[in-house]
Image (cartoon, rainbow, N blue to C red; front, side):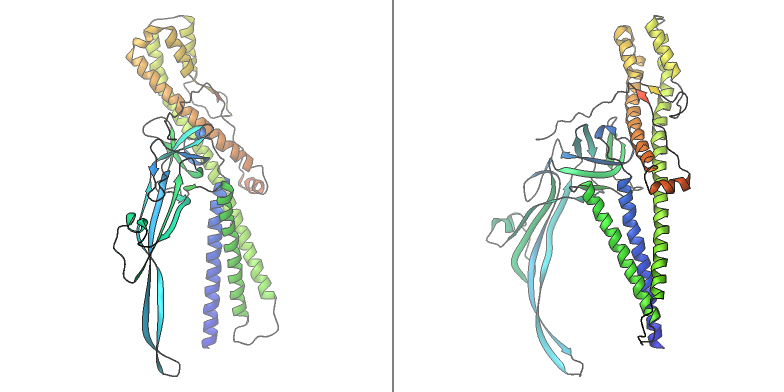
Amino acid sequence: MPSETLTIVITVVAMLAAAGCMVAAFRAFKYMRTIDDCPTSKTQGVFIGLTELKGTAESDEPLISYLAGKKCVQYDWKVDEHWSRTVHETYTDAQGHVHSRTRVESGWKNIAGEQKHIPFYLKDDAGLIRIVPEGAEIQNIRVFVEKCTPKDDLYYGKCPVREIPHTTRKRRFYESAIPLHTRLYVIGQARERQDMVAAEIAWDKDVKMYIISNRTEKQVRSSYLRGFWLWLIAGLLCALGGTAALTYMGGDIPVFVWQPFVVTVAIYLFIFILAWVLNVYNSLINLHNRVKQGWSQVDIQLKRRYDLIPNLVKTVEGYRCYESDLQILIVELRSQLQATPPGEKGGDFKGMAPLINIISEKYPELKASQSFIRLQQQLSETEQRIALARDYYNDIATFYNTRLEIIPDRFVAFLARLSPRPLMGAADFERAPVQVKLAE
């Protein structure tokens, strides 16, 4: 029967809609978990990987917003023009009679606009880090809203374009921006800068989340949490609607039958719990891999130092100076040729740059050696990279270890056989601060 076919179609559509809502809900859940899985870092503790930061927007050469004239690091302005027209039309009613009617249509049409942004610095109590906003989801502040007519200078002064057809000669100007010194929440991928040994936050095609927001972390997380529950409830309602259509197929409404609805709710809850466990498991595995990535960055820099130290030892020995200080230096350099994971014997590291600086000051003749100067500079940069990588590894490992202890993640971690990771002990690694003259 046609009615039965329609009922089946409605049921299938409702169930597909329920599945789509479940997928959307756990997409929001995934983003929320990503925020939860990112410990807030200080700017001096950022090196590589997904990073969460809080601070103020600063720049040495800020933009001036087009409409509000505010110093900012990003702005987006638009102009809409109002239009209205009278439409005459004919139509045929249900009895076949032809009628005519007149109606008025109106609305706003965008006629101009522009978006600009520049790389800027995020400043906190530890220092600065460069932010490259290209590709980010930017949540900014409305800084200018005004409606005007041709009598106002703004009408043609800031938007000297021809009026659109059917215009009512009203224009709406609005602008949003990130003004200088605005408090920001940033979550995105960190990478090493090309111009110096320091980190920056930039878009990465392999990382879906890159947010620059004037809202707090709690507000951003809450928006995803609301989306999670709204999609989840919408999916349940769709599933119940499909069950109702299938239960009362044929049009007759018998006495209410509750069993199919209980079964539907039970199935929906089972799928929800299964999806939740899978998402938490994937989240912990992702966090585990980020810890491994953090150590690999340390390992890369330690191996880089491993390649530099033998050359440095040869340069120092070449002076045939066998004073005790130089002998101690050479022993220290040779003792750290191997990179050992933290928690194992020999897994604690010591920075070499301070000791080399002391030796170079005590023995001025070493400063005349171009090879020594070059190796000293390379080693100093490597020590800074190790410090950056070490801080990131310790931050993410600490957060990962905490995740394995809290409930309910602890049960999923037990099933996955995930274990805590030891932190990296180190001393005397030098960190070079980013020096920028910021605008007031």
